[in-house]
Image 1 (cartoon, rainbow, N blue to C red):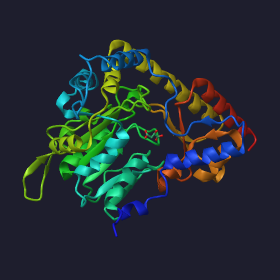
Image 2: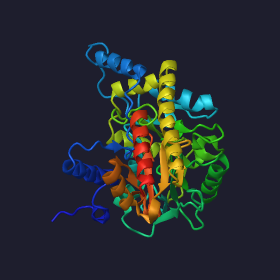
Image 3: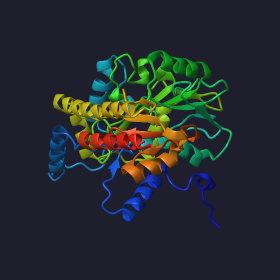
Image 4: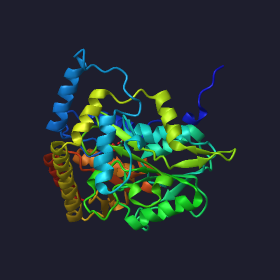
Length: 404
Ligand code: MLT
């Protein structure tokens, strides 16, 4: 009889956001007409910007023209997009990343999950708790529940910033600005991680999907702002939250040429070579029209429109912070991030508070426990709804607090 990957059987029955979607679906079926406000999954609500829409129209037309039609593209992404990324996201910030170090993809969820394909199974993998569930679940899918997975506890006491591991870890996932806690890492804190990785010959998988929400220029947008990081880190970036591409799907991963690993026979292998080998075998590239849309984000108009979008979400975040503060909640994040991490009131656990908010306020959020055991007793709200719906939600939460 054939066998399955047993590790899948050790996973929770469904992915966090699928569980929530099912619960909300059940609630709306049993409460027809309930006006539900969604502050759960970090999905954007503003439409794509005019610069992106025109680029989509133009490239769709090209695909219908004999002389411009494109079939398979380069698996790594078209040069026009890789060059625009290198110039705007890195060179303009004084960071030396070449277009050839950039791999365009269809989402950071795929890349942060797939990166495990090029890593050995004996690695000790350190993962923060709480964490974006993809890092943990995809590691479990690959190596199963083993003592090779070490959780780095993030709590109020350490400001939700993990300590560098006291015992050996070969690979560590870091996400800053952080999903789910909305907290950020200062340059000094990130440097501590880079120094640790260089000293221990460890690899940092740095998810910077939320860097565009940083409001204070002293906070690093990229791990490559730290000296030496090109020798120990892979960085993931996304157009999903910054430019509203959750439905279009486009992201990129930076694998520097300098990043090398010593193999069992003592020879040095480049991770860039391995990731390129993986991508060109398992991935046929992000669609041409999507890459043209992403390129439009880097035009002057595109940058301005993206900034307006981010500003608008950050105004929602400020509204949520203010509302929670007035209602007496303890919370974190929301200053350089679209996520606000609050402490559940009245000693409720995460799912109890989820039920209370859904039943009494018709608001959907994300229970902290869904991001790991250390998330128990916490709850995540997103700033990605409209200003109007966010204000409405905050009003409902204030009312709930006044009747507690
Ligand atoms: C989230 O809500 O954590 C994000 O939407 C997840 C994702 O980007 O896949």
